[in-house]
Image (cartoon, rainbow, N blue to C red; front, side, top):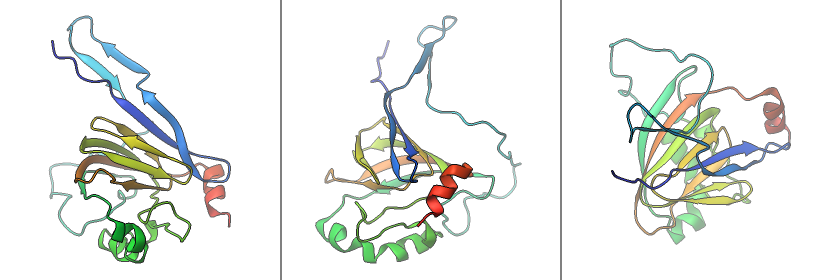
Length: 193
């Protein structure tokens, strides 16, 4: 029977001032092999409560302009190819991010400042599941960062972040974005000067 490597999970959070940080990093707490079907293993990564809207077989919802966040009450599921960071981009990329976020339909998502740890720092009011499929990535937060390899899963809970690619080769990530609402204490911290 094939043995796959364990799945590593990174869960982000907010401190009392609204700054993002890694709340948990490590193996999944719930991994269950079915007794009735040996070799069938469920790896529980994350769950949310509530009911998403289930749409019929109408038009393809991926047609039309590219938009970063999920629609209100909806979801987005996508792969993203991420090129390696270059010295030029790290030095001058902050000047280009407004255009980049406009291109993906959400200029206001960018949170980059002169003090930002990476030029692509951004935030969306959503729960995002990010899975590294190919290559290596670094999740950059306001406070710290975490190195990710294929199979790493990030639970991004509306936190300020960037995806840095320091590997020297392109990477590919899979994302599922789910519309969310900040808890009042987090919303208050994020709106404070």
